[in-house]
Image (cartoon, rainbow, N blue to C red; front, side):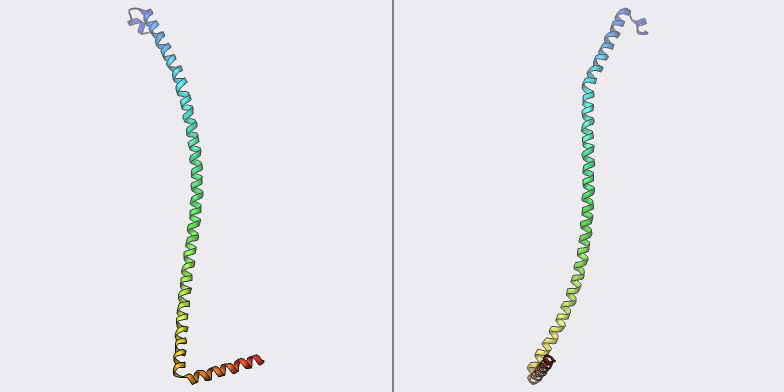
Length: 133
């Protein structure tokens, strides 16, 4: 070995090299005893976290699909509400027109009670005729 050339006592250098090697071996065993189980524990914990992450991702995907489906149904509901609003507006207009016609009839009956009486008599005769047939 090269260090022996520069050392006054070559045996002391050899002993020193042996002590260093023993120290290195001892440290290696110590590190393997401490680090390897720690690394394995970390690996197991990481595997468990990865599994949880996959399961959570799948749950989030399912939840996303359900939210999308709900959004579609809400849009359909809003469209249906718009159609119903339109129908209700149409019915309100028709009712207003009928109310106007009814008010006109009521007003005319106050002005022309004989005309109303004649109309009622005419309707009564028509109903009786229909009953006979």
